[in-house]
Length: 273
Ligand code: GLU
Image (cartoon, rainbow, N blue to C red; front, side, top):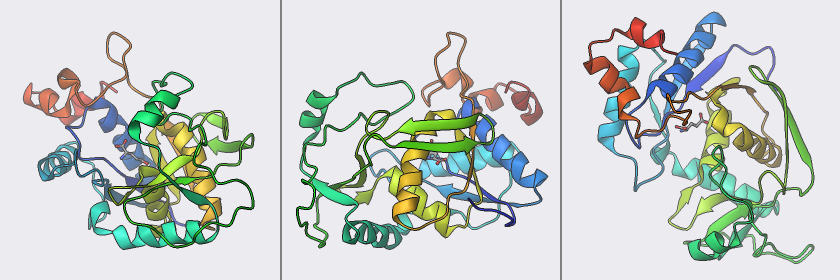
């Protein structure tokens, strides 16, 4: 665990839509925790998904966060400009035998889903179909246009302390399976990019939504495999709408833009958290 270092936090929005009240709450918490610790807050633009990320959403999120009086230390760090860093980590994982190529198609994966998608996690537990048999020699040469998966230690519990929610534990192979670290369209997965960047940016505490709790367990495994230290974690409770549904980017009524255009002040928006 990162200890006795000056606090360095980050906000890491994805420019795939307009920010809503839930994002605003998480980012305000991140900002306040950095201020309270007399630390630094950085801004990472998680724009790796080329199909969904747009420059217009980047501009909108920057404007909305400034309007909320959230400030960060420039410059904004943009993931799509850091591909060599992620590729280096990918090679390190391959050389150490932590990952393997996976040729399953989207259709194969859809048919293999053992449990229904949970609301709080996006990646179903992988069946292990492409996992190499133990001790089988595998190539350490990276191939283009290939999905790579991380081999999780099945049945091992991955415990961690959450600064907000207390002790957490997820079991590899049960709560999550061998997860993607690289996509065949040549971009790193969120898990890999996040771990590489949090280490490279020397983040001491990650503040993010509780929908990412299981991802934290995955990321701890990646940190171990890459010999990186584990930051502290603070997962903020998710906000729900009046029907109890978790806020999503399509919740226009609770979008920051809509609230702002309806005449609310930043202070009035913060009171809705
Ligand atoms: N970009 C992610 C999101 O918008 C957050 C990732 C993180 O904080 O680790 O949900």
